[in-house]
Length: 476
Image (cartoon, rainbow, N blue to C red; front, top):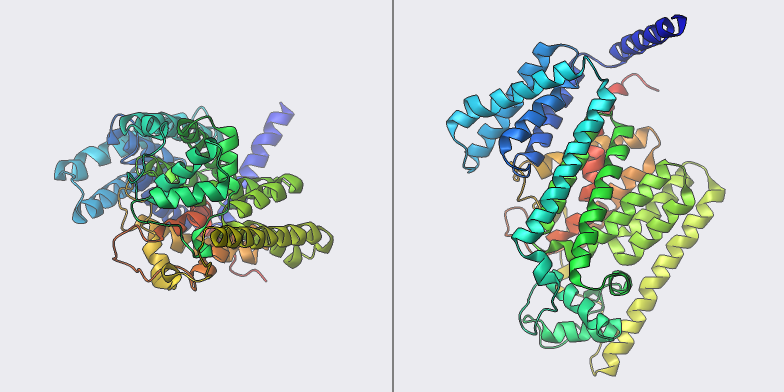
């Protein structure tokens, strides 16, 4: 009995302490902003009906508040604003849905949440919502793969001249390697059978790292298994993202990360972007961050090496860890990260030498530059934000808002000396200020916008922590 009273007293003390630290306006601001992202992620991807997504929204919002009235008002406001904005931007949503149907379902979700809180604590209810988001992703992933015949098409080698798109080019290279060709021979043949080219790129930057292709060709009997692996790894990243986001925000706000990532990865399936190397490299970079936060540095470094060796932009996964150690004054541990960084740079130098040697052997003169790599800059970064956003309710707003919130969150993390997550976001963005294409905001997609894959998952993980910056006031 004494223990029970002591436990209740501790809970009360923690609640009062939280109220002292957190200004009263913060639950409202973060629930409205993050609720807007949450419903934007789920409204078009939840199974059966968008009405269920609005039930989820109300349930999600209710976990922020102790007062039922606040849950109702905020959830209805988000439902109304998000759908009204979507309709104004061209979405096919009826006025009755905007003013009555979706607000009703969001308030119903808030009621379910309020009742549930009487029997379960917020953490368990947040886990339940995470389970539903994950289950929805898994079912939708397989449904979309079958609906768009992705599994059937990926199970066959693309015929010559039937493709002119990088992800199909990559699956062609995979099948040629399965047929016994070396990576360099397969990449050469992939170029020659691509409708866009009649011979291989003589530009070294046009040849990717062979690591992902080696992994695919050794592990997967056909392209269908690559699809299954993409779905499975995406799910693991979603779960890891919840843990990471929860640790830097709270258990409710952290739900936004898997919701947004699930929608991001779902669109990659019918669009065939799932073969793009940025996705696969970022999977392992997220695992690196996960194990880094778990204090399992050998695993973290191993995944960082794998990420960086698959795609050069994700060298940030090793460089970010190195900077964390240096700035955190952990000189001894920085040595392993330094050696790993040198190893990855060495890998890309060796690969460039081997590509150059191969090009000379087939009568082509290798060059370093590329007309595609002519730009970069803020406008190019804004251009990349449209990548894989088509399944969002407000694709013209949510990616931009997410990046903005993530940059605010990154400032908070840097002030708290938690550098690694911030550098995983910031380092690729710095690179894209100088390297990219001449495309900008408003241009049609498809020209290096997939560079988004090297930073957006980290923006999604960090964004829910934006509100923590306001708790730093008065700190020395």
